[in-house]
Length: 174
Image (cartoon, rainbow, N blue to C red; front, side):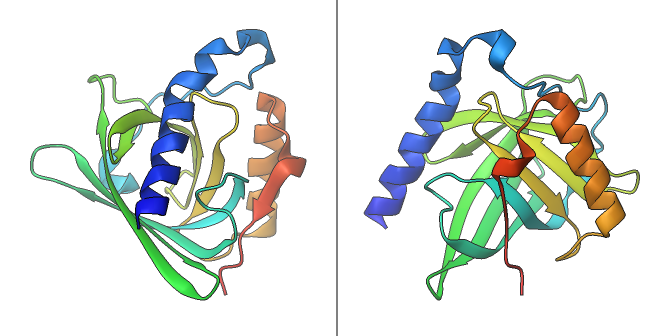
């Protein structure tokens, strides 16, 4: 547990502060959606693809659950299976302002980092999440698989934003 804490703490610090040193022209376009309906965003999501990073490395069956709290913040519960063992990490998310766009903060342990909802399906059947760092990218779905044509569209839009889709790791959800 202490090792997991330290790994997540380090990743959060890197995501929160490390990206400021990068040249803006080399970063992909991580513009958030203009309007994010938080009520529609709440609930269960399956992680279908992500960029590799150490705090989820070798994890399968990764899910995220978002639940609105009475104070307007969002409880975040991430679950997965690593080497046959179930893992769970709890956090909290919130909007920094009242813009209603897809830019949120998320905090696991001590430090918040940017959580940028860059794309959502018309019925919130999928979501694409980025960060202030180009090293983090997730493709989420309400189902444990996505229609191939829909996924192709998501990947094409990510490529047009400047993300290297060849670096995505597709997650075993079975």
